[in-house]
View 1 (cartoon, rainbow, N blue to C red):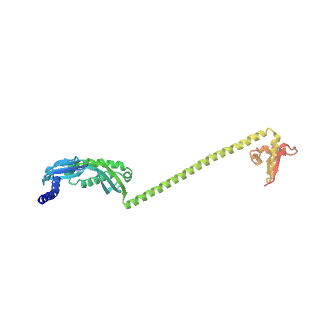
View 2 (view 1 turned 120 degrees about the vertical axis):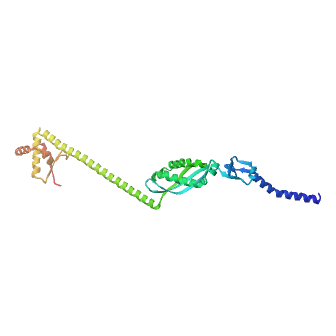
View 3 (view 1 turned 120 degrees about the horizontal axis):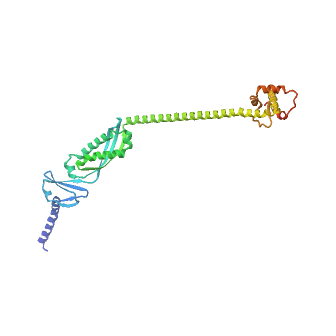
Length: 315
């Protein structure tokens, strides 16, 4: 190969390499690449021409024209955070709510042409819905029923965003708080309620204990009275039985008289097991019987009961 041919070869190679970027630029102007979960909107003179949603490489020869524009729109699931939304609840308490919204663009053409700025419009819509729905609830309901209120917000927002080509999948209430001064007042109110509930429980407990003690004492008093009523009756029956044996009755009456004459001495009956004192038994004795026993006391012989009676020294 002579030198002119070599020069021509290398010159053509350099020109070919230099033309590659130009050819690649032309291909980019004449073709269009669409990514997965993406849509490309093609406009001509600002008017919608077509929407390409199939991923891959597409030839678009009209793209080289200056009045033909392409706008990529992501169809992936996205989210927005809306923080520090001030809501007055049903009682007028200022509640600070943070919302988390999950959505995706379902209709790229509506999202691009039917609303000027759907992002800012979405912010205003979510704030308005939160104030309208949460403003009818009390703070405790907002704090406890987050899932239910989130579903209500999602349905309320989705009805409006559907006109913008947006599909709202979920709305979550992330955080619920109060202003510092309101929070301090709420804590003081809760503390006062707890103290009052504690005092009520303690007072109710004291009243129940007092009532139980009174009922117990009344029951015990009734049982004691019943027992005391049975004791004289039993002693009376015993004395009635002794009346059938005059000797024993006379001996008992003599012992009773001795107890009155010598009160410093205590007389017990052997065989009664200490259950019956002479003084107690004598209280039920008929005075007429005592006079009769006094008249017959002189000159009678000691009987078995007198011999059984044992005077005990005073302790």
